[in-house]
Image 1 (cartoon, one colour):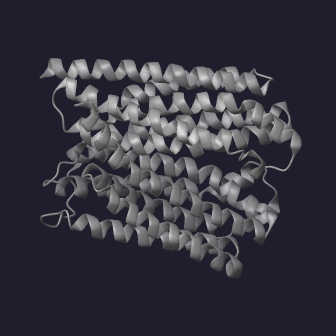
Image 2: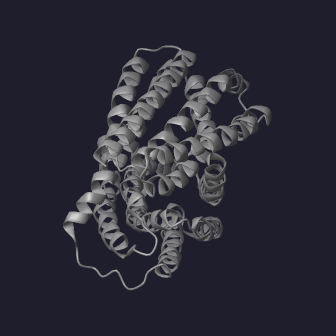
Image 3: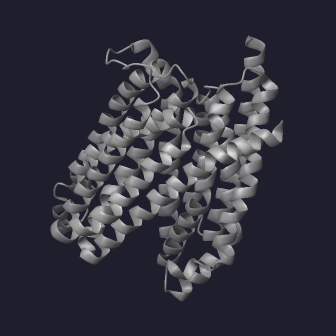
Length: 414
């Protein structure tokens, strides 16, 4: 029944959502500590983040491909080959992050900011590999319905970050933030692997089964590509806003942050949907699982939007009256983006459960490609956000159509 699936998805999504919020809040502690350390250090952190965050999103997207393959009582093969996928994807992401000083010099970043980078990109590159490995373990735990175990690991990561970052930044500056990040992620990864070991009947071994790694990659790599497309086009939108005015750029950045704050719930709900979808053979059961995810999202997302709109949180992000006024004017569009993005995310995770992730990449590439072209010709911030709403709605329609076709193809194949 739909009500049973709604309770199941909501129960699984809640600890995942709390985990994401805890990690996000702890990251703000690092930013605040660097802000007090100095403007140059904070700028160097931002330069590294411009490469690090897309790289990390691609790596975690790739290892998320293990989710639909998880079966209770038989996870050894998924853990073994998922670990190799995490290593391969993590090393590629690490190389990209390690090249930040070269990219910064070639992009004309101020010499004092480049000099302030120090060993920080190297620490963050190591962190990408560690985080990718831990994300693989987290995905397996999610697939097994062990959301509370994920919550424990993430709360530990958040606590380590919140304690170590201010302490080490105070002694070692930006490099201290890198050490704190690696230490926190290492602890989280170790705890995740320890919790995962309890689900194994025997050791997974380390022999590479290339065919199965490729099978996992066929699901995971399109997710990585989708993340990169989204980051790239959101970067284009930021540039388009900056071309309008400094006020528009600041307002756009705040509005984007507000979307992320409210949208996080949809990612948690989508991940909770995947194990339910992948475990079902019948088309009706699959559609009901995704419908349950949409119901939970349509209940949860208004809560986040209500906090953003009614809580008057905008002044927390800026004291400039002009910026605050622009952001408040964008709030109706922010709400529409949150809902459209949330719906398409749940539908996209439904495709993950069916192991059909390439359609999501195609839909994102087409819709966000058009959005990028429109954005570069827009000279009005409101028009920019209207275009974003239209693109997200189009993605939702595309994801929904692809999901229904995938369900029909699956039923025909059976």
